[in-house]
Length: 159
Image (cartoon, rainbow, N blue to C red; front, side, top):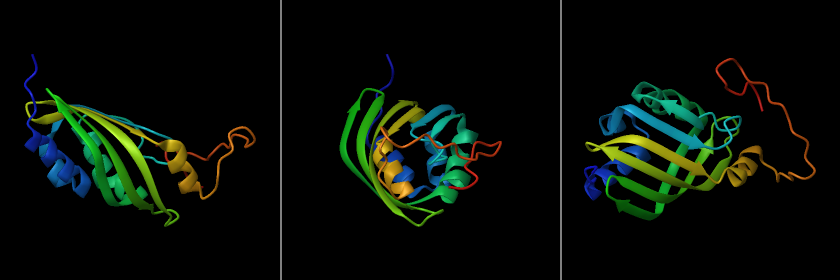
């Protein structure tokens, strides 16, 4: 049976996560972590799967700072059960490429081993967030698919 994670470790993780400070979050992330953020990577480059601590630290040192300035994270629900934690969070920030303020909800599911995150899964209310990022309502029934210019690293060249 997996060792239960203490509420204080979960709280420390979320305080570090909210700070977006790589030095604060690094001690709480396992070397073999699998970090997944489900959402439109063409609009939010931080979405996708990131394997290993180095890839996750790059999120905090490079990708997040170039994409979005987080202003507030409000956990609305948090449940801790054994070695896992689940939260429903309201996130507010502004996008660097447009300076648009966006607010969206996400669910996060985390598994801990030896007081470190080994699996992080976040699911963004991506339709709402994408509409805010693009600055207009998306009508999936009438709006044609748009091919975005993407560089070899998978980053949008221009919106």
